[in-house]
Length: 612
Image (cartoon, rainbow, N blue to C red; front, side):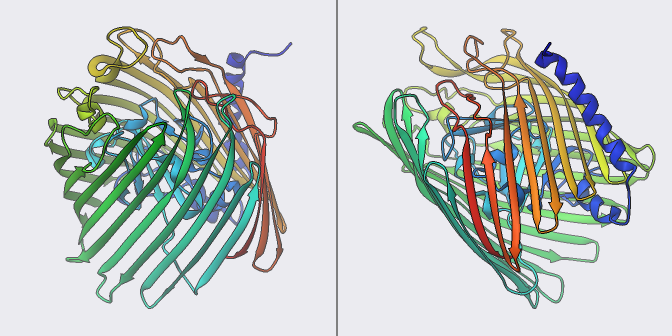
């Protein structure tokens, strides 16, 4: 008799918890290098480099080796079903996507690129679907509120993408590939370092005819051209100056309300930073940046234009006091949407600014660690908000670290919610949240495990209301409260040429006013990645299983659970040359994460690479 999915979850949890214990028995000469990947340095959690156990947070790092092995077409493919992470999308290949951290809405999951926030001021979230994975060498996922460090919207956590810095002799890399749905991909990069100067430049192009996302509506294509430049120089006295520029542009086709549409898009981040050692213990850093999100959508007789720009000036001062560290800073941010036209008229307001000050103390009283932070935001549109957090950690022994934390955060109303013509509510207040978390991390030999339980209370939840019952949203209002609780178990091991990673997530996001589950969040998810090196070959696969979800707040539109299997193989067939084959959704599972939008089904992609 086949066991039910609900009965299989405890068995999976037992397996995941036991895996690193077996791995720990095989510790050997490579234990130090394994520790670097199993207990990596993380900077997003505390604004300063800390190993995963020292960060006192629930963190996941996807490193360059993992990204290259998995070779995802979309950055959300690498994020899907990671601990505490859920993804919904209106189809593959450049279609609208949302990322949920710990059940918090997609607008409550900030995206950073090398410390610069990328988002649309009108929708409030980033365009995940337009990010080319080959531009990045590392992903950090920090779960839990980070409002006291990053300001608005860091309710469920923060995702940060890092671009390569460049090191060593000049190293070129060229990759050509293609596959299903008449997809063509090409990328090239050059990186290196000399005399204190580090550089990385890259470009990529992706074209795909797409597939039939909505039944009977024909294939929907997508193209993306991305360029990246990162340059930095460290002077003899220790001062550092750097610049970053990343721009992606292209076109995506889709269906909306039964009509074909397409969007010309462009998004970019650009920034310059300077870091100066004032004394041996005091470093000061200033970053000036701009993020843009531009879209022009055509369909029928109407055209809408959304042109948003966010400019930020952020200063941080870091003071080292023995084993302790203090960080204090200020931030000024201005959102601008001049030139935007919804197709129904222009916005009532075209800009708003936000001024903030923040401070953090990282205290080491070994074996006890304390992290405390506080931030005050003053926003032109909705007033003032103060957020804070406190985390305590204790090293129980050489293996286990216990942590407990409390943090607050808020989500700012977007321009669409405040000013969209015929829809907005200018009286909206920010959502506010408070989160409690308890976690335990174990690091044993060449394996690790991390268990976390949490509970979040959200007040003044911003909800779109259908006031006249005609099935269309009329206005957003602060009318509801939500309670989100969950459990996350992550584990991994590097043993005998095997790289194993697994995650099990349970999330219970409930609207406290109605008792219904928040829309588009799966309650259960499991992810298992396994890769093995075999001389010049490497083989691997990823299994992702997710439970049911609902597409609507009333929980009437049920979307069934699903499981997908991806396989991959790579071959270094000559010095500097390699080829890679990926098979996605091998079992050709049909599923939806948004009602009416099909997944792509089984697909195959092959690539040929030369260089480092």
